[in-house]
Length: 206
Image (tube, rainbow, N blue to C red; front, top):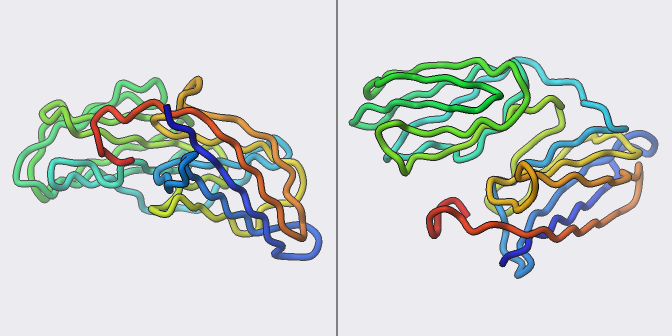
């Protein structure tokens, strides 16, 4: 059984109201954990969503890329196919059920995501193709990088609810909810261990 550790390092950005927050996600053995999503709710409320951005999950080498994508509610996501075979992308998620029937190389389809939640993706032709879209209802939501780190610039000082999601997290909905207090100055570290399920295939995305 593995454990996941989250270390939140808070560094002052302005003297009164905001801080730069860096979250480091690691296993109990110290290995970096990419593809964890950290969502912040200052004072228990959603932060304003950002402006329009472009999002995509590509189909390349019979895999989805990226494995985890974070988008705000209302985002439109493109699904371009760069393989020499056709793909049939789908999801049965209550947050967004859809089906993109067979389409070929250099073709793309797009889907709008209007409800917050987790949207697992699959290909009806290639069972090994798995990915996840986290549709966030807060503007402070981001995915950890290859080093297991994610940064938030100008996080509001004060109490905050932090939700940490990972597809292999052993918790209801694969999510852990934490309560932190973000200081406007100084340095703060928080570590929270959680259990993980093993990946569905050895060595896949973790």
